[in-house]
Image 1: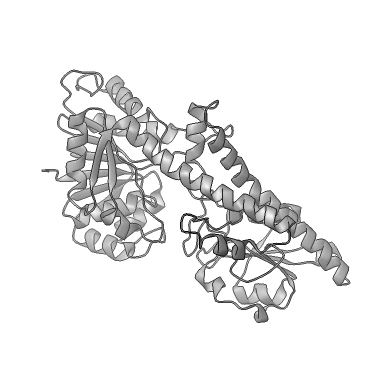
Image 2: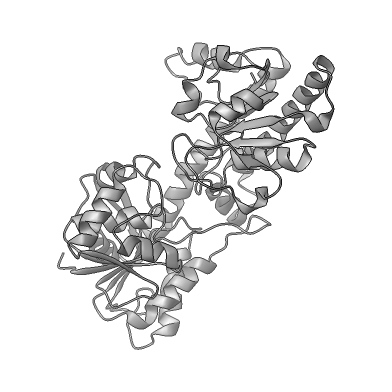
Length: 424
């Protein structure tokens, strides 16, 4: 591919690593973000997110002039849209960020350009992107709106694991779906610049559904584990021991339960399927409801622990300190998006009369919701001061703790990292 300049719309957990990888492959990369802090940080050769190996690649490519960031789009040969796609209060997809990004790049497009949507999206979104472009640029021949398109529009979802993004962007296979076969071919040429995995070619709708299917599959399996943990708790069974035993069956692989499901994908994507097929997606909807209900179950366990603590010690409820360990949605990252740990901590801090202590070594300040409701403290402070310990994210630093270090018997372990406890 003769692409010289690539524009990345959205410089978050996917956009910035993608920009860095493309720059490393020799492209001139222009990152675009509406956040001035992110733009300024990147242009200094630094990063505003936590991701192993990313900082060095960004620093090197900024210094060598292959990567820079800006607040507004500029002309390029290829445009990758990596903006958020959350859902609204009624679980309907919110495509406002995708639309804003599309409208922002439309004036910059020229014949021969490639537009690739990477944001996880409902089926039909790539076609909608093409329609938005066609409405803004009637002078261009847009796929789906012209028999002889002169730009390409395609969909290629990311499928990487936070904490391993830099490696998996290169090694993982990519599903690429163009509005036309030629769109797929042109989009795949861009990924071949850095990809060691395969480019799996299909159409845009199948590619969109593939990403939703992958995360819905995981969500359903996690829901089974989470529901199993609730049942086992009621039956006084150690769910983690049970799962270890069951997984010795050659055709059984039960996942691990937790306080819910978080992140920008698994907690969101299944709702896109449900929103488009509400009468058909019965299992997918039920799994989402099971996982969404788990934080409230954890809160009930905390309430029971507070009651037991009051019975055991001569204290008022306002004197009880509860420490929550971990706010990120998965171990050893700083990403709080859709985190069930954050939700549990919010539920506790909103309900509890006493102090709520939050331990999250990967952030420097708490989300604004916790203002005047909770304090960010160190592991040592929490272990020393708290009456009730709640493990929500199994960061490695927490997994190295031993129960003999605890000064309280009231421990709720939603991750199975501290041995038998109230949360088992």
